[in-house]
Length: 426
Image (cartoon, rainbow, N blue to C red; front, side, top):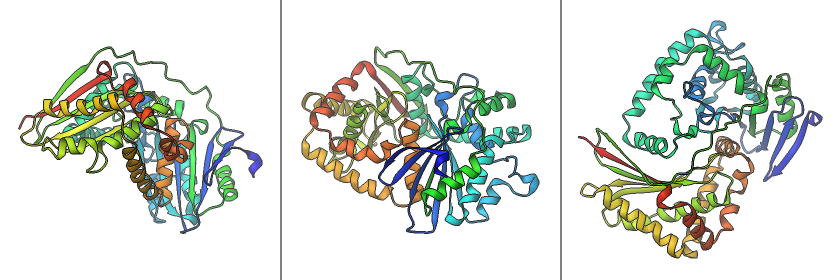
């Protein structure tokens, strides 16, 4: 069976394969510690691939691909949910900037069933008019709920202010008008453009063997053809930001929040590793710099930081939740002071060591079980290289204070900063 697939890599027990016929990528990680397996399909399409009028199309299709496919639909009494839940499967899907994923966690002797479902809806989703209209209502209700969550609203507003041309400007769920007016033909065209084997990776994690996994993938996906045209590539490049940007979100809420965000590089850039390490140094644990500066001093009730690992350049951010007697200006000043200290003096090696120790413990926890591994592989695939999952800690462990300081100097500058404030109105 291996002659159908070309082996493209092997790391930490994971083998990578490419179908010679239709280009489908396959990742396999055998683990016979329990009779359970996870099967996940990652499509390299997300809000990054959407244009005006079609924002939210990927998320809309996420809903619709559960409504029925050629073989699995309510008319035959074999809907996707019913079929999979009948054998005890956990089943769901998620949409994000660079990808959409569909997955099942189920008894390993039911792997064939998961593959049958996913191969059928890869090219056989029904996308019926009546389903589109019913899910439109569901998505608009979901959008309304998100609009009432202040921090979610703040986060999206900052991204939309920081990115003016690149599709990261759009919310993953889409703009309301687009969700309201998106046509069935528009959704079907989007589906027929991106949902093909060559634009997907399937991950088989758990109680299986490489030979068995490849044999099953060939049986269920091998007959699917290639896309009629090359996958469209996003052409828009975000213009260089040349000045600080500010915004306020004013709505009902209790405590305010301040978010500082800076343009950061793409996921596979070495500076993203350095900024990820810095985010942890600043906010992970009670001994971190910003916890001591903000929470211990009563300025904020909590503080967090992170850097996006997207296919294209993203954001490094710090979010502080204001204490009752604090102000946005005080929180912002404290965050900017902490960043300036890193720019001027770097970080201590002891801070790096402490952070890496905590991250190793977290990594061990996150690799417990087939779904956890599949979910992290999913994000690495979306970022552009599945080995990022395997190499993440190794990449961080090679960094020193000079790397963190250099990345902070390069990216955490005022002209690349967007500041958002949530101001409660009641």
